[in-house]
Image 1 (cartoon, rainbow, N blue to C red):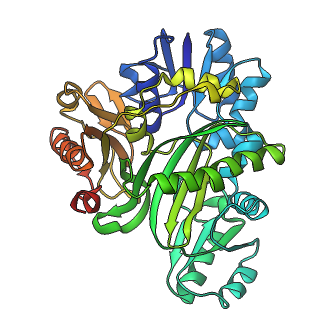
Image 2 (cartoon, rainbow, N blue to C red; image 1 turned 45 degrees about the horizontal axis):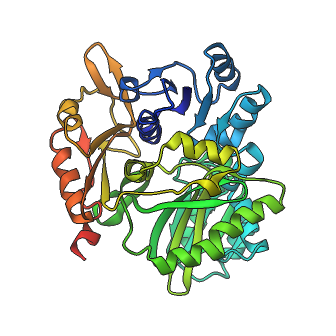
Length: 423
């Protein structure tokens, strides 16, 4: 089987690493890929939004199975384009990927089908949003309706801060057209947990849980990023929480999408807040989380192609999804200054030292192969993942591994999973 993976980040490297283990797969292509993916796949210089070129490449190279990694092409209809050409692609179609593409849509869906989430209101003008804010309790959450690279969420502690936030999203257009419409949402407190789920339109099967660290600096300070590290499993995602989510969140979401004529096939990412009133949905994504995939997929025992094919064939109920009885921690090595201003082009040393160790992974996010070697080419550069019998052991292993990889401008948080391992 020939497989094409669309994307070029740490998530796609984690997917490619899992795909490479499948006995069904003889050749992997990745568009556009990165330096790390290039070690296990043939990278193709086609952008993730160039659907015509991607479809043409898939036809010319007799690709049997395409996996769409990032949110932008899914929301724009990449899977539809492949299916229209008679090709097999894994991921939700455009009309289902809207569950991530529009926060207003997903909030309205949850309200209509009684799926637990924070109370909210939606606005298309800054004036009406600011007028509503004068009636709110604080803190409050402002969300850009559209895709904003995981950064279009503002937590505002005062009315003045919230007014400024509306201006940032709707008038200054910091996230472009994603801020044409915004959601103003009740601020929830509790533990935040991420659960990725395989879906076949009828059946939904959750994977092992994970927790992400979004803020740039230690102690959850600094700006929101695409993710500075993760660990799996979450000790707060208990059997009781899992049972509640299966009954009140996961299956109802599948059923709701089907009832709306938007059958969801692919990966549903459920961002959960474990509040004192029970689990509630913070957000949905229509694909593997990044860096969550970097701690969840290395622990999965199943053949990923077999599971994805079962989703497409509406036979997910025949799969016994299994995960290793251990833990994994991912520490993101970033360029200093991320997520705002940072330099690129620094040579990365020591990658081979980590690659030789059993149970250790270096997933490339922002890297490029040059004549000088592999160099930094983004804000998030690498995800260093390690397994361990416990979270404490996995964390120690991951941080030990980060010492082996060096590049100028290297920055990382030093407290990924620390609160858990000290608990």
